[in-house]
Structures are given as C-alpha cells and as structure tokens.
Length: 443
Image (cartoon, rainbow, N blue to C red; front, side, top):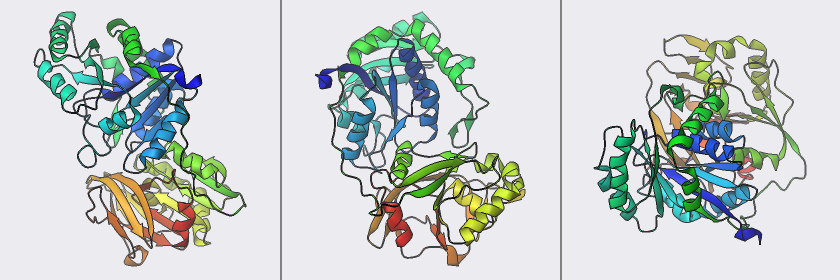
C-alpha cells in the first residue's frame, strides 16, 4: 500500500546557530538528489532565505513549517502533502534544536516530535574533540521524545581529528555519520538578514561542491538506512476559509531582487482567491491590472537607486493606491510605499510617496520576533525581522488593535492604513485561513 512506502526523512539540527545547519542541509539535499532521489525540503520557523536556497539545491519549492504561526494540524497536512511524490524529505531546523519562541514551542525539536521523524545533529567540531561526548549525550537524553539518529561533524580537517569524535559518539550512544572539512569554496556570503540570495552568487554550484565533499566523508547510505521510515499517509487538513464570492479577483504580486520574501503556502492560498500575476518594481514600467496588490518584503535597501529611478512604476502604484486599490504591504513593501528610504550612508531616496511614513537604514537596530495581532475579533499571526527604523504620521497608525509577542506581552509594532492599503513591518501568515485577507480589509 502507498502509505507503507518508506523514504529517508529527517530533521537537521544543531546545538546552536552558526554550526553549519544550512550548509549541511544544502549539501545533503544535493547529495541525495545525486543518488537519484526527488528531495522535498522544509524549513522550521518563519525564515524566508533558507527556503530560497533549498529550492536552488533541490529544484523544488521548500515549505515552511512554523508551530507558532500555524496549527499542528496544518503543519502535518503540509508535510504529508508535499512528501506524497518525494523520495526523501529533509527538514532544516531553526537555531539550536530546542530553541523555540518560548522554551521548546516552535523549535526544531517540537517539529521532529510532531512529525515523528529522526534528528541528525550537526556539531561544529573546529575546536572540539572528545568533549563532544558530553554535548551529544546531553542532546540525546535531554528530551526522551527525540530520536537522535546520528551526528555529522562540521569543520573537521583531518581523519585523525574525526577519530576522536567517533569515540565521543560511541560513548554517548549515538552513531557518527561522517564529517565536512572546512573549505572556502563552499561558503555562502551573508547579508544583514542572513545568507545571501543574490542571483549573482551561484548557489547551485556551491551546493554541488558541498555534496561532492560529503560523498567522500559522510556515510550517505547509512544515513538513508537510519532515517528511512514509512512516508506519512494522506492527512486531512482543516477546510480553508475562502471568500464566499465566486468572482475570481486579479492579484498582482511583487517579485524580483528587491521583493521576494513570500511563503509558498501564502501564494497557494492566494490562488484560491484569484489569478496571480508577478511583476518587478525594479524592471517593469507599470503595475499589472489587479484587484489586490501584494508587496512582500525583501531587500529593497540593496536596490534603492533602481527602485527610486523607476518613476513610471512609482507613479502607477501611487495612482492605484490613491484610487483606493486594495494593497497589502509587508516590511520592505511597506518601506517602498513610504515617502523615502534613507540608506546606510544617510542618502535619502524617494519612493512611491503614498504612505505618510519614512524609513531609514542609517542607524540600524534589530527588531525581531513573532507577532500576534488582535483586531475586532480577528487574530492574525506573523513575524517581524528588520534593521530599519520607521517614522510615521499618527493618522496612519491603526490604534484599535493589540499586537503581542510569542509570550503574550504587548509590543510596540504597528499596523498602518491609508485608504484601502494596509501595511506593517510584520510578515503575515494566512495559508491556514486565506479568507483572513477579506476580513483584514473589512475591519
């Protein structure tokens, strides 16, 4: 029977960030693909950048599984649906294995337990030998619900160094699966929000080099053997709340180098509401005809000159918003709709000029965390992650709402509204309830 089909499926975790999770994830996706397997990748948490990198390694959309912004039912449904036609499933964790929005809530550990998949631990062993035994033993035994299938060590230069780590694994009761040596040609450049997704960086080639290295020093056949288990059976997700209107609306989605932070499942939910067309605020001259404009986040601060110089696009978007066109703008999209953006050298670049606000990168400050928005009986969840600062006119700020963090404490995040445009630094997740957009504009 189909549900008895076994495939390798595992979560890649680490003791902390910057241990090499993403590097190993990309390399393993490519190495498994080289074995003839169709690999489906997933990312724990609200991250946008890692799924983009996953796609360049696998050729498939990578799907976010977030336990704060969505229900376990929704997450299980996504995992089952996207592994239906896959030969392997690789889930990249977030931060350290047990790091969540609150204790383990939303952590890689919670996702591994919920999906009932084994964990492969990535340990940065550059400055470590037999002491790894204590660390691995702790991760194996801290939570008995975790199945720690094996360990892959990062930044191990020699086989003699690795032999100490094998001894550590043996005494900790976990299998050593191999190691990745340090190599300059497998490093992905970083930006201020994470790893670079610049199209000029050949991510596919980097993934190929990581895979080639792993094929020499990691026991991939043993990894497949240890992590193979029955693929999830079809899972009945909760029915989505979609607009009762039978009219198919036209939805324009900004997508280019500056605007590309979109959850794939959000886009799938938009398809339930209407016909999607993608356009570039950098390269195109006019906004497509639409009934809903979605300006997602991204890296507008890296493309300010070109965005500001495209006067035709700026004026068509401003005219659309001035005429009452429905618009949702998140983070970078919100910045773009403002009067101007100030870059890190304090140069002011004019933008669309519709929202009465300005943003600046001149004095960067990190704003980070989950958000829950409560407004007139409507609850929306999302995530905020930016370094820019915003100054807005009071009349643009929505005041009849409460915005909380993951622990339920009120935060000073804002939602802005003018005409039928709603904007915020918050990236919303509506895939579980696409009808929320109708409610949002109606509040």
